[in-house]
Length: 251
Ligand code: SF4
Image 1 (cartoon, rainbow, N blue to C red):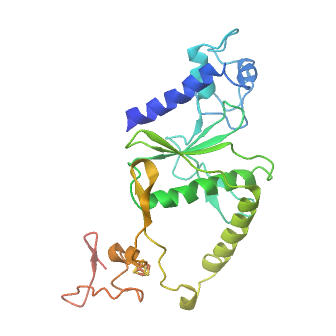
Image 2 (image 1 turned 180 degrees about the vertical axis):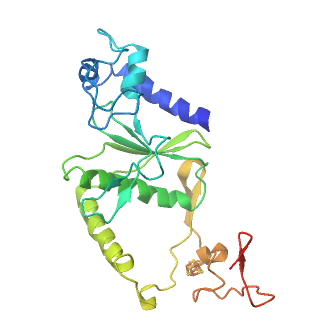
Image 3 (image 1 turned 45 degrees about the horizontal axis):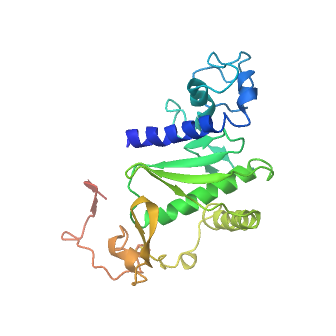
């Protein structure tokens, strides 16, 4: 998976090289840094041109530096590099943001082959990233691409970009959801046991020929809560009828 990630990154470096470095090359050569530069070992605010900066046709060393994405610093504490919605009710943390083309592209890494129901959630996750970028840039800047890199297959899945109208609708929908479940305790009537359909995806997150399970309650079959949920008639085994064990711990 590490080799797959490096190969996909090298594809970006090659694209940057073949594009002559993109529209940011001259600024980078003169020492201009992004407000939030890609972690490259140099200070965030730094007045010197990068030591690899040259002149004339871009070199591979320069392409390596110019293509370098912003990414979560592996030494940072968990979730300390998130982007927060201006309304302070949502935050997300991008894995990588490529900017060498002049417009950002958000990439999410998945240490999997992309088979199964979760690949459907990833589409929503990436579209929410596009919305979050738009919201945190005064609704004036949009990303130009959303990609999931499945490192188990070494392939890229492109995710359709949401339109401005879709992002505005998502904003209202998610704020409504936040108000419903986080700003107060919802009543049980507001939480009907109605599972979403179980979706099928093939390797690389490709939609299967049969997109959803024929049984609309298929999700309940392997749900951790099926023994206590009103939406399932699963008969939980409680031999002692005094305790439940999950992950080796008594509850
Ligand atoms: S058993 Fe699980 S999936 Fe099914 S309705 Fe209950 S909580 Fe939802």
